[in-house]
Length: 416
Image 1 (cartoon, rainbow, N blue to C red):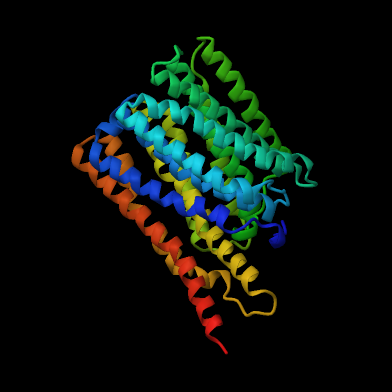
Image 2: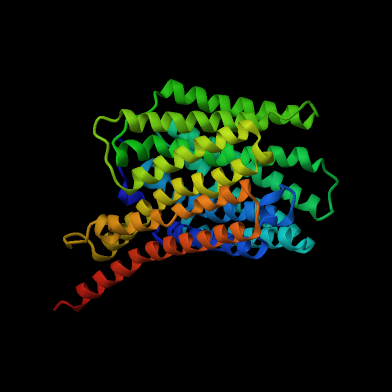
């Protein structure tokens, strides 16, 4: 069992600003879908579709994963994050400004915004790598965990660099094979960055908070090595004009991760039932369905994107955020009140019924794949409204942590 290192946790404001920012992007996704209707769900190259995809992948998933990495590495993996106090605010500003400019540039065709995003986003990912990779290289123990994080962050940087090139291409400044590069960019981002990071985090989160076992190290190492070889090999083959094997690579490895994690939950002798378990179980089932839809090529991969990017992966990170944010709040109280103070527990800062309510609010998001399968303006806008309300509820739930922490502090300060 991995031991938490509370003294190595970063300044609470650093990961929290990313985690509390993710729901705003979920609400923006809903607003865009209400405005654009089914135009955003019909075809891959529609400007509204490109903007919506990047709101999910960068705005929602990116913020959640940046915050999780900055909290998880020092507290759970014993990895020092360098320059967090100095560069943390800059990292948050660079990343979110870059995402905003990219989404605006794709949606409205603003060339200046696309070029600015092509500079800011690779800089943000490079800064994240600079803060984390040196610590991953010198830390002791947990080699497989550190390897998974290193691979994920490496693919994140490569994906950002490719994305910068593509943004410049869409702006008309570079002549590029846009279709082939977009396939490589998407596969490296979804599988190499997001799924690999989730699989690495699962190695700690599932035993610690769900009571499951772990995948044997040789098996997970083989899966990780297969991701590396397959993504690079299929990318070279695609760019050389030899056919597209990237979608199959993403689908196969995502399906293996989902099935393995569900098997671990099924086989756990003393499964800890609660909101985190159910959010992960639902997210893993949806991820498996997304992988099968990608294999089948249903509606050109649009159904897989709706299931995977709109529901499955956000459910997985939402479950983590509902655990990490109250833990961050408890650490902040511990540091402010010092030893000897009777602090409220993590579960009191964010009660289980509040977590359950926030996760149940995600159920209407099933309208999203329905709107892909049966395109209509009213169904797409209903899915947009569901997104707006679901992520609004998530934002309100997460904000309950600082509200309860501040209430506790006010009672402590009022005592004689």
